[in-house]
Length: 112
Image (spheres, rainbow, N blue to C red):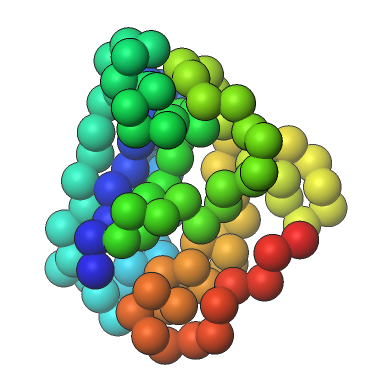
């Protein structure tokens, strides 16, 4: 499994996103899995990577939190918690489900 975290320079959510990934990987019994962190430095790179904002989680090259029509570009990303409130990180349970699914341990994550 390939796990990558895309962030903009000096993203305040980068460190909490890495911690959340570590927790999700431990839960999936993949604590030693390498996580690549890629800094999206400019608009050209954002367009090339189809970057939906910082932080963006990619699992095997797929954004499990992709939303149709979401703008591509240099920005902070807003996720929705279970109550629908905006947050700078997705709910941990949804990230765990996405990783478990990619690892073949569960069915596809439910999308709201």
